[in-house]
Structure formats: C-alpha cells, structure tokens
Length: 210
Image (cartoon, rainbow, N blue to C red):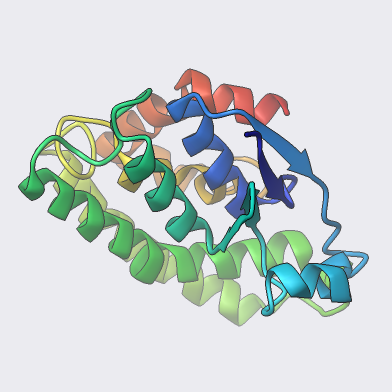
C-alpha cells in the first residue's frame, strides 16, 4: 500500500518524507497550497480538522501531526530500513526526550523566524522585527544547549541517527538557506558537524530533490 502524504512542498511534511525514505516505505505526494488556502477546504478539513499539514492516508488509516506520524512509522517498521528509535529502552527514552526538546524548545523559535522572514508577505501581514530579533536570540540559547550535548555524542540521542535528529531537518534547512542565518549553525563547532552529518544523508538529499 502506497502512503499518501499531503502538503509535501512544506517543511513539516518533509519530516515525514525523510522518515518514510529512511524506512524504505513507498509514498505518493499530494499537493496542498497553503497560500491559496487549500488547507481550509471542506475536503481537507475532513482529514485534518485543524487545517494543518501534514496528513497521511495509509489504506483506510488516517493520521496527522508530523511527529506522531514519524513515531508511528518508526515503530511499525522498526526492523525495516534505518532503526530510528534506538536499540534499548534507555536509548528510546533519549530519542523521545530530544524529540520533545525539538518540539517544545527549538521549533517555536525557528517557526517564528520562518513565518516572519519567509511567509509574512505572502500571507498578507508585515514581518515583525521584534519577534524576529527575540526568536533569533532564544534559538541561539537553545543551540548553545545543543552544542554542549553534541560535544559528548555524534547525535542528539547518542552515537546513532534517530527521529530526534531527523525531526530537525526541514526547518534547519530553512535556517541555513532562505532565512539566511547559517551562522547560527556554523558558529557552533559541534552543531555544525552534526548538521553536516544529518543533512548529507541520502534520504534528506532525496527529499530536497522532490
């Protein structure tokens, strides 16, 4: 069964694509145009009542929220492709911890930067320079914590690539690319080495070519 992934032009759905490719799962990309408001259509709201991206349909099973989706496929196909959850319950605990750090500490600030620098004009409101400045400062403090952690291990949960690392790929790609704040990664030796490792994975390169 081919998995349908909605909204693959945007960052959060790319988190799902990277996971599916790592696990060797076939998928079909279904476009959803946020700028045109297609995520608010009655058809889409039947799949995702909050109008957010992504959604997957796997046969008669529908799931939304990108981190829930990647956890689902990493667990369902644990013995297939790359093991993204760790080999012990302790490793799994660290994967889950850093997934939560990404969602609660890293993502809010990088999302604000993405929204105000990349999408504000298209969505019809002016960028808020105060929000941009504050978000950059707060993200910097989060990355300082990452720098300390990554001085002790190659990846966030240990010396193995996991969902915790994968979950950072889409929005960090914005940060080093169109947001034009690559210095935030490169000024931190261990964060920079980590980014080079995770962003050079064949799965992510394939996502960027789609």
